[in-house]
Amino acid sequence: MAPPDDQAAAPLDKQDFEALARFRFGIRRYLRFSEEIVRRHGLTPQQYQLLLALKGFPEREWATVRELADRLQLRHHSVVELVDRAQKQDLVERAPHPDDARAVRVVLTAAGEEVLGRLASLHRAELGRMAAVLSPPEWHSPG
Amino acid sequence: MAPPDDQAAAPLDKQDFEALARFRFGIRRYLRFSEEIVRRHGLTPQQYQLLLALKGFPEREWATVRELADRLQLRHHSVVELVDRAQKQDLVERAPHPDDARAVRVVLTAAGEEVLGRLASLHRAELGRMAAVLSPPEWHSPG
DNA sequence: CGTCGCCGTATCGTAGTGCGATACATCGCG
DNA sequence: CGCGATGTATCGCACTACGATACGGCGACG
Image (tube, rainbow over all chains, first blue to last red):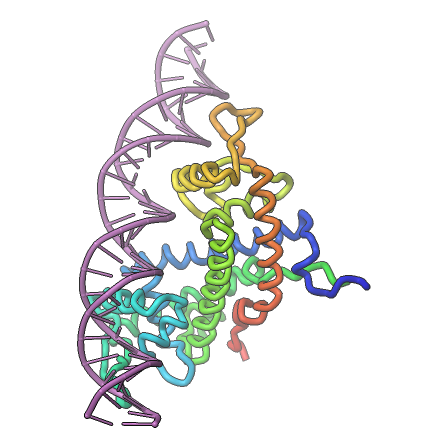
């Protein structure tokens, strides 16, 4: 009789909107921080994401273009261009895929590894500081 | 003698990189979800953020251009253009500021209010589902 | 009560980047 | 060994955030 506990149906009150807005604000602030610090080191935000996705790839430390497209939530050819630019800056390089001649292994260069180390460290620190704002809101609903 | 407990100094291990990457992946997935659903309703992601920032503004439900620039982490004139586009679609409108003739009150229209309600509801639901992936990582550090 | 520095808003041209459409090579299956 | 499926690359385009700049109201000071 009471509607199912699916929150999607219930209308939002002012508090909900504020929570949603605050969370989005948190994300923006984090990305903004990231962008600034990353640019200071000579890369674009996307390039940092690329490097991080490689180094942080489960099991290995490289990935194919297609895998990256999934992890970065981009189209394949957007990743191609991203890799092109990063390669031009000697952050990553392409290596042949052992099993599939169509695919490409994108791997970090020494230089890429180095910058990433520094940047990731700074990000970890900032994340610790921002944890409160960045945590997704808890709904005061299902009391 | 042991370095201070400031994490920024300690080098990251594979697990840290994976955690960082997973979190960024979560953000991307959420923004991606948001973008898709928002576009399906005829707005751009930025427009949704604008509406949400207005409706979710602490205390009131409107804001000046400058305040929005802070909340959206954009430059003032980027917000101007964003408001221009949103106004053209009848999502928001400009009203004079009671106390300061330089400033502008940006307010939601009825149409804007309506779409926002539906979109915010969907976002709240998705946030519930994604909470696990979206939570900032806890560092296994100071063990 | 007029002038001047300051702040908020708006305009213009530009650069970066993600996308759709398309092309091409390789894989694997019958 | 041909053919659809899959992975990568190319081209042109559109969107949007930005820096530089301009304009107008504001408040303070003499």
